[in-house]
Length: 106
Image: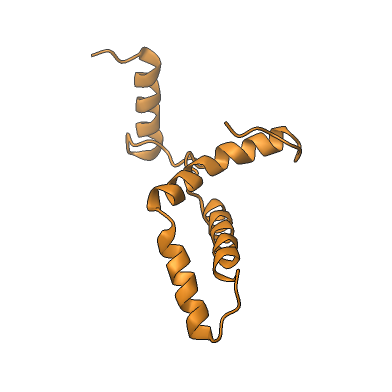
């Protein structure tokens, strides 16, 4: 097997400390963009886009508005939503690096 000495040492130490060879739970930033905060941000953006499209004309009733919102939602392909969620953390980092200024998202 191609396992380094350091990895073996760490695994033995972890087993002695915890009684298990499983990795310890890590704190800190999740490795995924699908965190609750990011999901809320994406949801807010989607809602604003829906409102812009569905409310571009006046509606005669709440039911007409609901139908317009559902139609606007159904027009958004799932892959567009998935891509927006997956790219959010990368875009957020670029924004932070630009200190809130202009940045290219390529």
